[in-house]
Length: 248
Ligand code: F6R
Image 1 (spheres, rainbow, N blue to C red):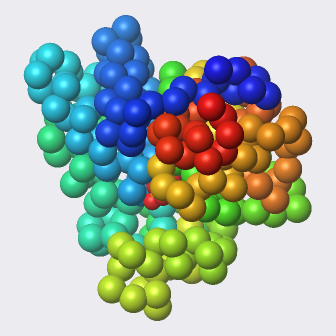
Image 2 (cartoon, helix red, strand yellow):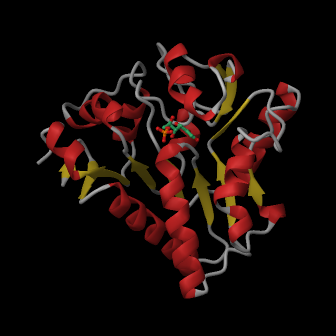
């Protein structure tokens, strides 16, 4: 159902959301083997990648010519660090399928800022994305675009909100280990993708979901509302959350 220009798709549960999104990603590559996929990390995505691996193996789908680019990365973590997003992608997706290491891009959070942002922006400019996958933070962030008085259009360094660090603490031994800064695509970079698919997973995302549904307001203090400016957005919502948000 269409609300505020966004297509909301209600699924039975998160598992069904993951299968649906995995199918969409696979179909993009089946249509164009050189496609570029914009990828995300986090708890909402692990099931998506697990399903994508299963279905790609079952159908013999090759990603060898595809390109991928990730939304964000923590500052200061080596790509090999167990909590880096680079490592996450290797662990959950890349190593299971035939991705070409030379064609996948996860920003490197250990480079100088000039180099880090330069190579990120250059990759984005030279590889238009056919699809961008998104999760959403409990504070409404997309990528690591945290609530702010204005949208930052392009790749930039952010200081993470305390709330975000606490939300992500579950992946680390303790809060002190969660990096304070990150590098992220800007809102303009996200909106540049031809199509956007957002997976909403978890009760803490209700406020963000309601901000997408309730009115036409685009508010940088709830960054996901920027999606109302894009013409091809699917938001995938499990039934229980859709009911709570009065979408059904
Ligand atoms: C991750 C990302 C973040 C997450 C968001 C939700 O690359 O860009 O915006 O999508 O923080 O995280 P989970 O899925 O762990 O709730």
